[in-house]
Length: 454
Image 1 (cartoon, rainbow, N blue to C red):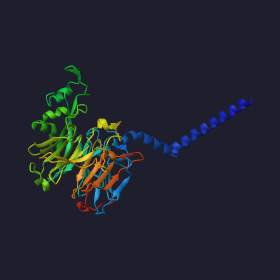
Image 2 (cartoon, one colour; image 1 turned 120 degrees about the vertical axis):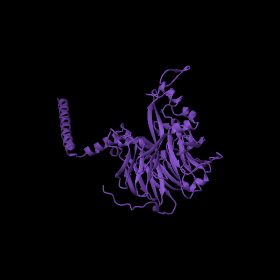
Image 3 (spheres, rainbow, N blue to C red; image 1 turned 180 degrees about the vertical axis):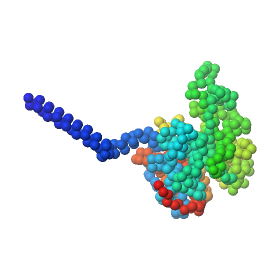
Image 4 (cartoon, one colour; image 1 turned 90 degrees about the vertical axis):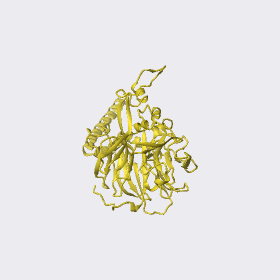
């Protein structure tokens, strides 16, 4: 009898607490009382974690914020693009890391109409990111969403214009005004089998034998063809021409067959650089306004005359899966050499930090084709950026490097010493991507950094 009474007592007690919990839960939910806000935050963090992880890489344990700053502050500012504060963001910082201005980038806000949005599949702003950005003397920012359009904002974030077609990777100001950008368009190989044979013919034949070896199916037979865009100051597309067509017309069509068939890309162009008039004399074979084009899938750098469409020079390797060629004042091209293939170095989308850190900045002389590593691989210079990455040549012959996978920006002097370093730490084990970086002297800007209304 005593045992039955004990069971009834604990059962009643359990029912009482269960009922009380239910009643308080209903009360808390309606009034947003604890622990409802905490549970909502936890749920949202779990919900967004998969999207945010696209912008994160494993930390190399290099600290947080400005971790090296050995030069006197001369008032210069560093402009960076990447994943900051849990969002796509552009920011301008002082050498001590203090933020002068930041631009929060909301893709859905910048392209609100799904019917004209270049990337209709994007339902969350973090499903895309930026790649290619510039800041003007008036404090405006111009940037590309990767394969998803381009935007110009004023210094307070109000939109000046947008380009509602795919743009990607690269955006630079043109000396004649406006901008050079990369674009792309897609077409069905089955409808145009003779456009770029034999590449397109292989893709069109999604199934069936090639001799005694079957072809691997290629989804729907779509091919992506990269283009070069010349864009006016007001965002109008003034000219667009195909990079693969340029290659074919200049006798380089055979290279297209070694492109990335799995990704259905003919070239995967990833950077444009323009030869400035101020240093053009250092390049006897080129002229001011010529463009250096990086074609990652072919390990290829080309120098193109955009007026005549003549390829004046090209070379494949020794760089591997490279980015960002730049014209140097000494008559050489320097290149951000990733020097690794993502199919080897990525595990579930994350960098394998057990691999050697072989990324470097390499220079090549277009005439002699001699190469020299300017920074990287040596002790204290180790870098590993499996994808992306860029560099800027500084007036004192130093370098500013954005090491994408490490979430790191470093300034290196002419003696290869790191004099400024910034790490975009996300949490104890991860860093946020840093896509781009540039140094600007204070006198570059023609505006005061006014307070912006929220």
